[in-house]
Each structure stands twice: as C-alpha cells, then as structure tokens.
Image (cartoon, rainbow, N blue to C red; front, side, top):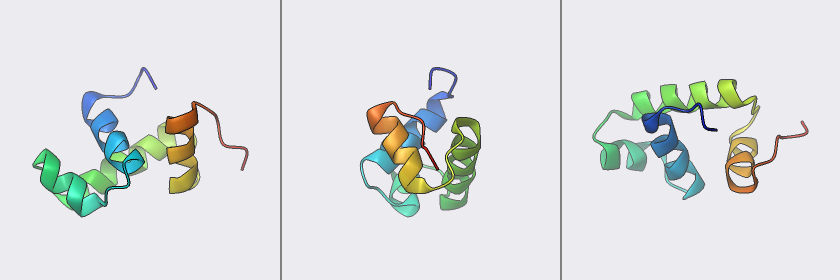
Length: 66
C-alpha cells in the first residue's frame, strides 16, 4: 500500500467509503474514466481480482484468498 500514488490512494479511499466512480471523479475533479483507470491499476498492483477483494484488503490489510 505504501507504493501507491497519492491519486491511487484517493481513489481507494473513495471506494472504501462506498463511493461510485462518478462520485469520486466529481470530488477529485477528474473524469469517471480516469477513476476507472486508477482502480484497474490498483487492482493489478495489489493482486485483487474483484472490487470487494480490493476493499477488503484496504480495510483489513489482508491479501485476498481468491
């Protein structure tokens, strides 16, 4: 998690908070597509196969078992 960029952390915080891509994009002043790109990069970098696994990793600090 320490290797994430500031923007990736902002996107992750939005996801953990239950925000949609559109809501996160508006809050950060970027396009929803850019949020999607950051989310995809986050999932790849952290090895999460699903959004729920990514959120679980962020909240519990655990790697997903799937």
